[in-house]
Amino acid sequence: MKRIYDKVAADPSGDGHIVMLDGRKLLTPGKRELLLPTAGLAAAIAAEWDAQQTEIRPATMPLTRLAATSLDCTASQREQVVGETAGYAATDLVCYRADHPPALAARQHDAWQKLIDWAAKRYGAPLEVTIGVIPKRQKMATLNAFAAAVAEYDDFRLTGLHTATAACGSLVIALALAEGRLDAEAAFAASQLDESFQIEAWGEDSEAAERRRNLAADIAATARFMALLAQG
Image (tube, rainbow, N blue to C red; front, side, top):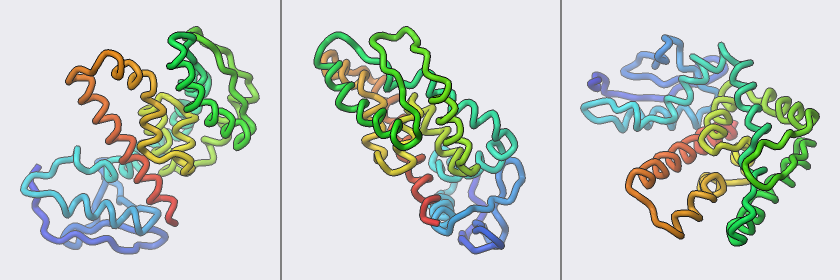
């Protein structure tokens, strides 16, 4: 798609903020007005559009994509998104530990146990840890507590949390990212701990390296999206 606009601006509108392209309101793919909750997010999205050259490249506009998803999809499928996001707690990555080699087990404990302890205190949701990959049944009270926490997120923040949870394979890591306990780099490191350990031992092929770069970029973009939402 070619760029056919010259001027980009972020303006207040009612209870939110909008992005204007040559004086026209930016719409979502679903033809909804892209009404944004914070001035910071509107300014950042406007910068994404202003940075486009002759051709518009949607892949370079992750904040726009997340905001549009919030309005076009999350708002109308909220119950499903809450369920999918909260469902990760039942088999959360941080609960499954290796028994060998000892160095990996120690690294998992150091990186993950503090997150489990934080989540237990923050949400009243203690998680059971197990050795191996056989699913460990978590207490229903814990799962309900996580579901309640996820349901409190508004549509925009829920979109960010859902995206981060899927990228990290862990609701606990995503919640820590959303609440500022982890930054994007730390969240990526925690979610990729096992893979990084294997790479240290055996190296990394180009395909895996590209996948990890894309994953790190997705987590970073989502972290920025949530930080901009938190600015009020």
